[in-house]
Every structure is written in C-alpha cells, then in structure tokens.
Amino acid sequence: MKITVRHTLGLLTLTALLMLSSVQAGEYRMANTEVLTLDDGGRLYDISIKLPASYYKPEQFSRRYPVIYMLDAPYSFPLVAGATHFPMNSNKMQQAVLVAISWQQGISGNASRVRDFTPTQAADWKLETGGAERHLNFLAERVIPFVESRFRTTAQQRTFMGNSLGGLFGLYVLLNRPTLFEHYVLGSPSLWYDDKALLNQVSAWADRQQNPKAKIFIGVGEKETPLGSNIAHDVVGDAISLKSQLAPWRFSHLDVRLMIVPDATHEVAFPTVAISALDWLFTHPPQ
Image (cartoon, rainbow, N blue to C red):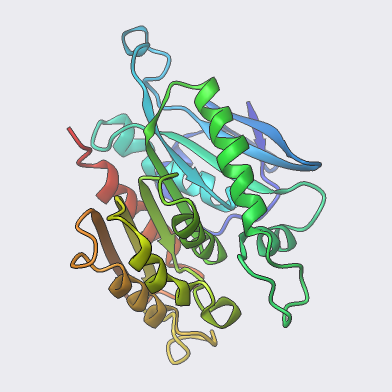
C-alpha cells in the first residue's frame, strides 16, 4: 500500500533506502505496511502499521508479536522501520509490529503535536496546549484496542517511543497510566515545558507507587544545553534529574538507562537514541 510522504524527512538510514521497493515523485512503497485512519471524536489521525516479515508465514500463525507505538509518524515511522529492517529480518532483534500515529488531519503538524503532547496549559504559548489527557485516552482506548483486535499482538509487550514534546508525553503516560506500556523510549524529552511542571511531579508520583515495573530508556544529545547549542533549556540536566528520581534503589523493578549522544544537538540525537534503545529492549528479549 502506498504511503505518501507529505513532510521532509531529516535522516534515512541505508537500510531504509534498501527497503524502498519503488520511488516515484515523492512516494514510496514499503513492504507489509498499511496506513489507516482512526477518529478521535471528529479529529482524524493516520496510523501507519508495519508487520514483521514472518507475520504471514504459515508456521508463524500462532505467534503473537510485541508492538512498538510511536508518535510523529511522518518522521519516526520511516526512520525506525528502516533502522530495524535488517536486524529484525536477520533475527538479530526480536521481530515486532510497528505502529506510528501521525498528526491530526487538516491542521499543521506543529499545532497538532503541541496541543496533543503537552500535559498542562501554558499561558506563554501562542499555540493551543494541554491536550495530553485526551490524546492519552485516544491512544489507550482507541489505537491500542484497534491494533490488538486486528493483529496478532501481545498486550504484555508494548513499547512507547516519543521524541522532544513526544518524550514529555511519554513521561505523562508513565505517571498517569503506568501499566499501559512495559517499555518507554524518551528521546530528548521536553521536561522544561511549563516551568518543569511534569518533571516536578515525578518524586511525589514515585512515593505513591507500589514498585512499578518498566524499562525506560532516556536519550539526549550532548549539546542539548544552552552552552552546547542554540536552545534555551538544559535538556541534558533535566534528563539526568529524571533518571535520578527513578533510581533503582527506589524501585527494584524499574530499569532506567540514560544515553548522552556525543556531539549531538536536539535536531540530530533521535535516530541514534531510537535504534540504541530498541537494540537494548529487543536484542535480548525475555525468555
């Protein structure tokens, strides 16, 4: 099925290029992939889904697969699909279903993601903010049930992946529905948002939990600091703070890793973070 590229994609790996079966005037075809549209109370979102190469093999019909859920589909989907194509097909990495949620149809991607990924209303933003609760409900009550009813997946191995404001949203998911996902990949999370309102809730949340179980991968670029690049926020310092608040002495069933990508700015850290996180999570799957 065709996927139309509507936005410029910053980085494609060599494996992504190899998996393109045809290239024509801004379009490409990706094997075992389809794009569907889901309705969230009048808001329409395209959902891109890629099935593992083994999915339709007769000897695998009883097999159920983990699912990796991603935000910002026009960027994350081709990147992750390309980067995991060879390791999954060669059984160096556990095969998984890829599901990527795009932005609301009919409005700009930036307006959609700023509204949907932010947990509080910030008065100093021109765009609408504070829609994370609704978007989490859409993810939990519409997207995930749809995927799990239509495809052979396992509810015991769900992975969330988000970058920048999407990473902030991932932390919001953890704090509000801690059992929805087993794995979290938080790329360059915008923990500075609204005077660190969400980051400031982590310690109190931790005190209320009964030893939650999850694997959390936090990744940032080394230059994501005011002195390292042109950004105004210390993304690296906030990531270190988040990891310390989720320390193993506090929770024996939380496995948290922090990766600082050398020489990387906010704009280029995510590809390295994404594939490194999935290598950690899926190269040595649980027996």
